[in-house]
Length: 201
Ligand SMILES: Cc1cc2nc3c(=O)[nH]c(=O)nc-3n(C[C@H](O)[C@H](O)[C@H](O)COP(=O)(O)O)c2cc1C
Image (cartoon, rainbow, N blue to C red; front, side, top):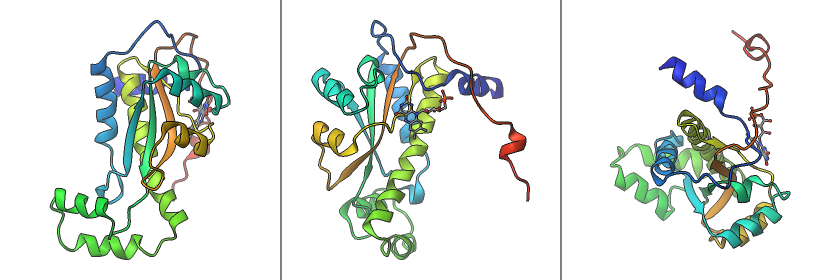
């Protein structure tokens, strides 16, 4: 098991070009989405929304505002990972999360105390942070079944949100993550040594 996980970690790299002749199966897509769904989030509030973009014209328009990166249109599946914006304790979405999962009564006031004083900007950042955890799990899950991916922040966020036609009062887009099969060989992984990265206190 440890070996399988390690293999997946070494298989994953930021894939720059996907094979347009090799589509992923819908089972594989669901497997990847499940890894996102099962990810941890602060207070369990599932701040993510997964937009699977399949419309060709939409993908082409997105590529044009994403430094023309070919991952966007060559991927078998393009997922824009969004975060929820209305996450104050009084917002309907948060209230429904607390009700849906029957969280204990003390938790909502605790949430309110911590979250509600935050500025809109800080709150948006907090919500967006959660979805990176889901993205990481989704990419490792994909790698575990031989599927490549690339995390992408290199895009004009306002333009992408406009092209997608999402309700920007409700969602923001944090990341684009294309999934599919590599064309080119994987480049060597550049990583510092653990001794440089870990401090024991
Ligand atoms: C948040 C984030 C945003 C990134 N944005 C892009 C991007 O827009 N385009 C791209 O080709 N790679 C992007 N990358 C990939 C990184 O450049 C890559 O992960 C890093 O150089 C390490 O290489 P590796 O993932 O192949 O090991 C991004 C990575 C992260 C984590």
